[in-house]
Every structure is written in structure tokens, then in C-alpha cells.
Length: 208
Image 1 (cartoon, rainbow, N blue to C red):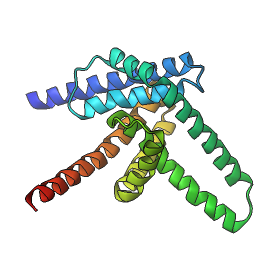
Image 2 (cartoon, rainbow, N blue to C red):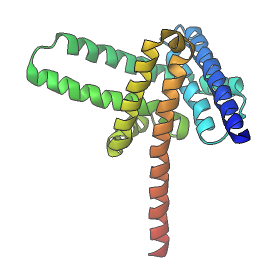
Image 3 (cartoon, helix red, strand yellow):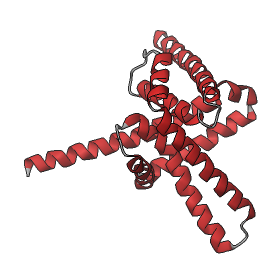
């Protein structure tokens, strides 16, 4: 009974933390006039959630968020604008393009875009990659190479947001942070598998 109460308490604390993190995301997105701020705020959110998933439950949320926001502002702002612009173009194309072949092509490109969007900020939070092109490349490569995880991620997101849209009051409190938590959890599983495979390769090279 004590363990159940302790577990329930942990869940309540995590929910409150997600609400607080969602508030930080909205505040710092506005601080960057939304368009410039949404990328850095999203990366900062993923940075905090990554620490939680890796077992660092007691990190200072605000200072961790602010550090990631400040240090990666320019790059993440540019990427945020880039993904927003590409997303708008693809959405408009899907609305107005009537050619079957062209529409099929746009749907395929949209899927690749969605995969990249799910992975780009977790990759930036997890890896210390200096080259932006490499980050973009890996955001597609990881997502396609581990397609089973990516599909589970997309299905899970769809279910979560269906529930949230049916309960708009809940969506207001942690609509963004809960989605980012789901994304970071699944992408982190992919990162762990990649790291395990790299360790196995290195082990084989040592013994060969």
C-alpha cells in the first residue's frame, strides 16, 4: 500500500512539473515573439524532459530550461522557423494540389517531414552535434531506420492528442509538454538501441 501511495505521489508531482514546463514553454515562446521563440523553447523543454527520462528527477527545472534556451537560441530559432515554413508549404500543397501523382509525392514528403520534426529536437537535446546538416540528416535516418518505434510514436501522439482535444481544459495546462514527453520517451529508446549497437560493434572490433 505504501508503494502504491508513493507511486501515486510521484505521478502527481510529474503532472505538476509538466504543467509548469508547459507554462515555461508558452512564456519563453512569447519572449521570442513566438516565431523566434518557439524553437528554442521547444528544445529547452526536450532538454528538461530528457533529464527526467534518464533518471535525473530532481534537476532545477527553470535553470536547466533557461540554460538550454539561451545557449542554443540562434540555431534552434532558425530550425523552428524552417520547420514551420516547410510545414505551411506542405499543408497548402495538400489543400490545393489535385494531381494524383503530385499529391502522392507530397504525402510521402509530408511523412518524412513529420518523422524529421519528431526527431530533430530530441537529437539536439541528446547529442552534441555541431553540424546542422548532420542533425537534419540523422532526424530522418533515425526515424526511418527504426520505423517501428516511429510508427508507435505517431500512434501514441495521435491517441494522446485525441484525448486532449476531447478535454480542452487539460490541453490548456500541458498540451505541449505531454506531447513532448511522449516524443522524447520513444526517441530515447531509439538512441539507447543505437548506443547499444555501437557498443557491440566496438566490442567485436576489439576481439577481432
